[in-house]
Length: 201
Image (cartoon, rainbow, N blue to C red; front, top):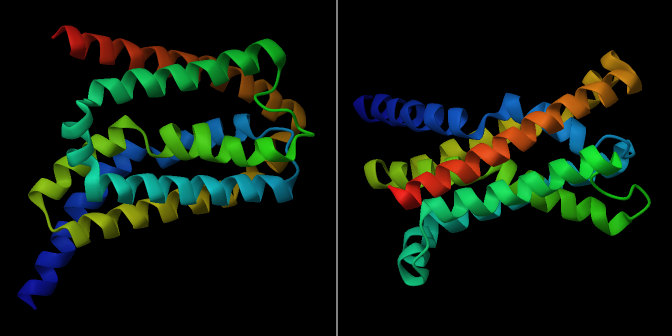
């Protein structure tokens, strides 16, 4: 019984930091903005690809992340700068052209699910850094389980995004998407700034 209690304690201690780092609720309006104008069937494909991408990146990082960092000389600051630039490009494209992808380009649906939604939005520098810290302090199996649970929460929120669309209407989603893209651009610049400050520090 004590082992069971310890298991759930560690599960909670690893789930909460990952939940904060992933920011599943905060990702929802960005997901809506990036997939605005995409047919429900294609939006579901984007959602599934994003979840699979995030899962693959996260598990891969848990397995060999530190080794790759040491081998290639990559630091967390590098992830911050690279991820920030990617998000900034998508935000600028949406604000200038009104869309992040061409709605008649079926190949682009998969791409937006992989980048930027799967990574660096769902699994970005914050999640990767948190995973790296947690596996050093807890059992790897428990960290992985917490990570999968967090991805499940994110998937469920994405799955029910259409309810928000119905509630707000097309005009409401369009207005919200522009506000969100401005915020996304600010988040991207913040990531780049933090990465640069880390380099300088």
